[in-house]
Image 1 (cartoon, rainbow, N blue to C red):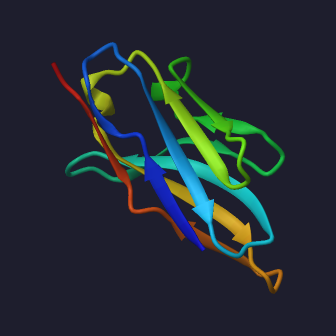
Image 2 (tube, rainbow, N blue to C red):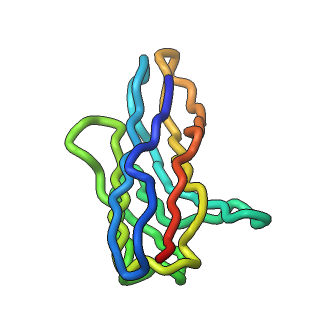
Length: 119
């Protein structure tokens, strides 16, 4: 099973970006999925998550600006980011919890995608 993020890049303050997390490989079900970010010299912090039930959770710093949604393909999670600020600059990584072919729960992280907010 692999996880790949896409959609990062350079954007001006106030702009928007949508990140996509795509899960591929042999898995039975997808459980919780989440986006984390790590700024230079900082810790990896939760940005937004979606539980298997569909319940969402957001960091206070992104509430009202970021929205997380499941994609049309199984194992896909999109992060729509608006009103971006230079403080949002970070490497954004996707976390996926899934059940493998032996019904064992496993976790996997993507490599990350860089988001830079700058004029």
